[in-house]
Image 1 (tube, rainbow over the protein chains, first blue to last red):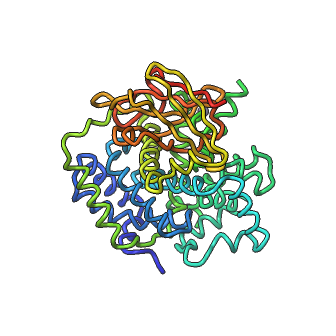
Image 2 (tube, rainbow over the protein chains, first blue to last red):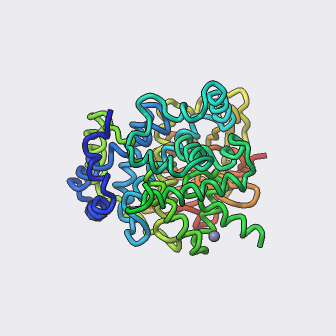
Image 3 (tube, each protein chain N blue to C red):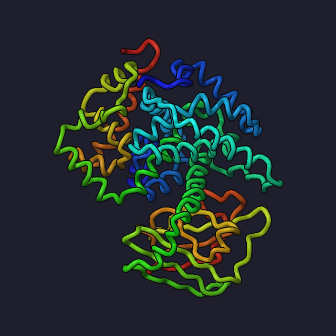
Amino acid sequence: MGPAQGAGPLLSPTDSNVELSLLLRRVAAQDQSAFADLYDQVSPRIYGLALRVLRNPSMAEEVTQEVLLQVWREARTFDPARGSALAWLMTIAHRRAVDRVRSEEAQSARLHRYEARQEAVPYDSTAEEGEMRIEASRVRRAIDAVGEPHRTTLLLAYFEGLTHREVAERTQVPLGTAKTRIRDGLLKMRTAMAPGGEQ
Amino acid sequence: MSDDHQIHELAAAYALDAVDDLERARFEAHLPRCSRCTELVAALREAAVDLSSGLETAPPPDLRRRVLAAVETEATPPRRAPRRAPRRAPRWIAAAAAAALLAGTWGVVQLREGDPARQIVSADDAREFTASTEVGTVEVVLSTAHDAAVLRLPDEVGSPPEGQTYQAWFVSADGAARSAGLIDAGLLDDGDVVLEGSPHGAVAVGVTVEPAGGSAQPSTEPFAVIPLG
Ligand SMILES: [Zn+2]
């Protein structure tokens, strides 16, 4: 299945961020119709991320609802001078998805599960389960352009909700290395995604 | 100085939510004082946005109706106490902290549905800790198996003053406090309050009075502190 309806505008980051900023300003003033518009624009993105992290549709739905209600309540704290609207929204979404996945399973159980999965199949295939794979070719290219070992580090932290400690353990590198890889991976990704940047 | 050096190194992991609760609390205490980390976190979060691209999936259609209905309900009721603007901390950080607080509120509500308080209190490994406080005996029941804790406030504890809320905190050995959720009047009536988050690493539970909506860090002296051990 391709990107869902309503996801379109988000593919041109600059325009959509201006639009989202304006919507958030109206939502901050408790404008319910603006909130409905915002819902249509961002809910597929939030739900898609929650689904990818939680791998459970009903939990993803709950998290999506929590995120959107939080957006309704907290829209006034969004400050365009400090970051883009989409980054603000997806930071909230990711944080909630990760908190939920961590509360679902004790750390040891999670680590064990990932290790078990790792033994069964190489990580590169397990990272892309069924319909939850990363489909947009632009992003795929950006993640792939990041190259290993940064790519795996980013995927483990962002999609599996592992802490840097767990990433270090999982990839069998020192803690400092895991932290550096997360940072460098994101910086490389930023370069790759930048307009006019390398693919 | 080396401590300080190490805390800067958490910026990327923090931006990606790849930190544990204690690291998150420590880093959020550091952020307002470090413009370098503040800028780096903002930049890395912009980069991280792209990781969630391409996964777009339409949520179940019913969700839209429920979310909009919930918002309508929130928008109409009699005046709510206005949420206090975040103090001191930059807005971006305050938003993240507020996210944690709201996670707390919602967590409490969801947990109550399965009556987990009883499960925790009656768990085989349930341990009780009590403390005499100015409001009477306050009790915390903790289950390692459930990785959860229940707070019991005495009946003498009435509803929080208008525009304020009670907030529970897990306090770690180094004195760092992490929100364990807001306790509103409705929860008080039920007696047992399931605290939000894991008690893991906490050496005490504290309860403070905070402005409506809660705080990222305790802003008043706790009126109750229950040592866990
Ligand atoms: Zn710093």
